[in-house]
Amino acid sequence: MRHTGGILKKLPELTTIAVHYLSPEQWFVGGKPLAQLAKANFFLNITITDETCTASEKAEYISAVWADMAKLLGELSDVSYIHIQDARPSAFGWSGVTQQ
Image (cartoon, rainbow, N blue to C red; front, top):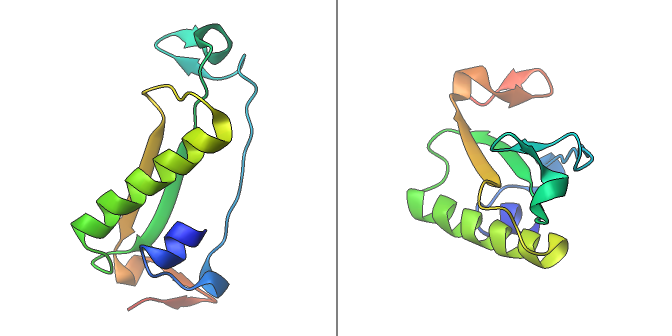
């Protein structure tokens, strides 16, 4: 959350987080269960309004989140992903109002 507010400049009061856990036996990488790889894995998907962050801010965010997840989870699988989804302002909103 601190990187979302600090690097991407998103308001904490409008930031929500949902965590979904899968056991290592239910997560597959390259056709093998994560339990066999002896590495941690994660997939982070964040949606932001399109054109509200620069490419360099997004790159900095991805790097910072990756480093923090490695500290939290230990050695990471190379196929852990961070996806910043840029949503068109007319197709993204909260409280029943679009960003447009």
